[in-house]
Image (cartoon, rainbow, N blue to C red; front, side, top):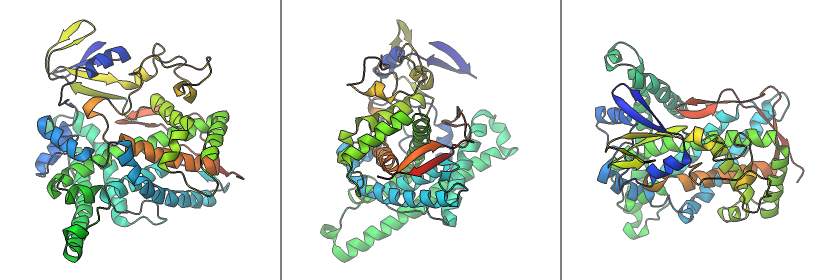
Length: 437
């Protein structure tokens, strides 16, 4: 534990699972985020309602309760299995197209980019019930603009955060940041407006009792959970959160499986033993795939999507015998904690078996339950955790069943770098060798 300062703001940094647990277990009913002021500025300038990442207090609690429905419980997440498998079908087709276009006939040169397009397509389909064409050979122009705007927003947010406000009228970063968000919200508004028109048409034709609730947005709008304006403020924020977790985690998972063929072989054996030939995985299958779940857990341990995050405590809080006043900002150093040898033995190694109850005695063990909390903890834990887990499980099982994954020779060693989220420092190229069974 140590203290640092950014201007007038004091940060209490925690790099211990034990100390992080102490703070997290003392959180109140309305945990406060401290890192979303830049997002709030955009919402205020555009007269938009705050979403789940930008609102606080009782209003956040009410919004979160509404958004939790059809999302938070495993049984609710399972409702989206068919939608995910539909997108995965298109992903597998696109993967084979890219393989065929490569010099070797089996290689994809940038898996992170391909997984990003997959994740964006999948989460858009879940949230807005609309396919946006990310996996087509020729991506629609409005989708291309949308994807570029996401990058524009994130890239310029770094400058907008740390440069003094007086530079905003002189340097281009602030305007680019706002322009990026404006396109994101405009794209979301178009999809929401289309869904509203669809629901209105159904009501006119079939009446209230004849409308079938088809998906998440439909449920929120027809069930009175959110007004269209509230949906407009919330769904783009959920979209931003739903892409990086999936795309980065899948990239790292395949990278390590390609470097550990013995683990990949065991995973293939597990998947083949559960999913019959000619069938696609279903949500119920993963109760019988502990190694697949362990691979994803171990990947998230080594590469938490967000290497740090923070909380502002609502009351006086005791940590390790020290009393900190209300409104103290604590920074959780997830990346450091998840690689702490006091928490995980042999922490730098990729060892999915450490998460299995029946693993061998020699397998590295887990020393503390708060050593890896990639989806957060408590009432402000990740809203889309179950969705993200199901999405990654479905795709990883499908890939490992069909292909042997081999690291492309030119890829070499890949390191992680923090660019708001944790990403590879270079393109991750992989070869996908068709299995015979």
